[in-house]
Length: 471
Ligand code: SF4
Image (cartoon, rainbow, N blue to C red; front, top):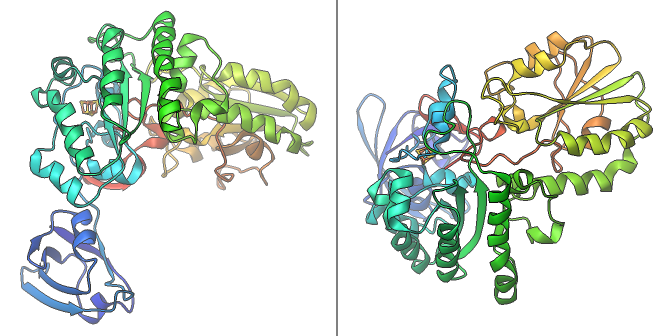
């Protein structure tokens, strides 16, 4: 069932005097389970709609329309499907006890996967659910595999159904769907020989598996060692070698490298990110695969645009500790071209603990504490990935409050470093300004399963409001 959330002006729905809040139960005799069903079932020209008005009055509408004519029904947002797992590395368990309500949502919703590219485990879908994905051509999907060994996957997800993954993937591929897959690498769980097996068995499923990314587990002070620990650098290097072992062969066969190590794996390994060719056509940049290389190349390509900044004496660039060294490398060039002093501000994350080093999870209060001594003539650059669509940091601290605390320093928020430095008038506490989204100066190495921040699925009253998701 879906509820009508909006009615388009001048549409068929308005002519029929349909009302917001009316529940659509069936279309052409088929049950409507959610908005995807609704759009799928109402694609035709002849429609018989069974509905129930907000006061409980049944309604039946027969519609014959021109294909170009809008029905004018915008379904209200769907309730999110939650996961049926208790993963040993679950990022939800890493939340501070006072985390905001949306951060506790264990979403595992194929609609978010299809729409926003978040990863799902498929454990909450039975045969009929999988068939629906095939029937409605919900592709590509993003699937968290973690391990193809059935017993291991069941232990990692604490769900016996998790062991069905290879059969489930085969069903979807046989139905013509395409899938991106990922492994969240947990040392002494699914690394070593298990990772080799997972790579091998996913590759054997054929070209319908569009990609495999290998992402190190992210843990906070709240779930560290319970029971998973962080990857060590030599383990990260070994995992990178394991991915390398298959990349060249797949490229010769399929024309792309297929298997990618996430940015954070290179950071943990202490290795520079590989060149742009590594990422083919960047299929997973939004998922933290290639964002660091994008940052480096973007700065190299755009630094010529840097110019003196009137009224700015000091540029302070806020980031997480993992990316600070790259910004330190940029600093002399920025200082020379802008004729300003440049200070990189790596913010220690006290909210989640020191194991969390990415910019996208920086709490507003920790940023404020790190920027003491702000003064007139300062330009402060904040990573846009640390803010959700309501301009709140992960700890619920508001951007406006931070900007007010930093006054009279000026604040800019952006995704791309050079654009953000040069991007128009700085904002004050009441006028946030974002620069165009063109690459990123924040480390987007936040894996969906460990990432919130800018990647929040924002949920209000159990409904998807905005954002991209995790899995
Ligand atoms: S990691 Fe994702 S799928 Fe696993 S228990 Fe947590 S929310 Fe559920």
